[in-house]
Length: 107
Image 1: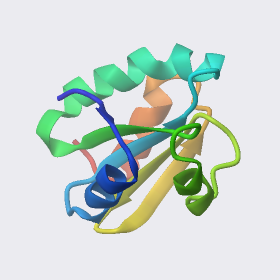
Image 2: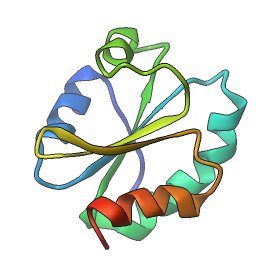
Image 3: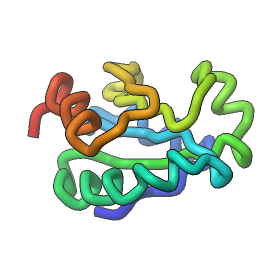
Image 4: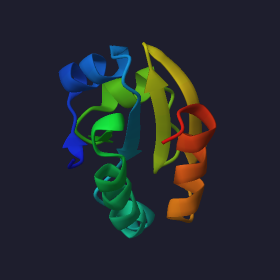
């Protein structure tokens, strides 16, 4: 499954689902966000139907970033059933993102 580029409406739908959603808050000017993007894409493929993977551009959705108290990018938050289960800020590897998923969801 591909990464979903989320606006506020898509974000609100995804986080309310029972299916877990990993949401990355990012910005196009963030070099580190671009560097970790391939790992996020691979996770979206590997977890397929078991996990929704989305991205929120904080420049396009500043109110949403403020609502979720995003201070640094990239920040990844794992949601399920309307609540945040865990988060990671500036992960330096696919393995660290996967550890967050495994800790709260499994595969």
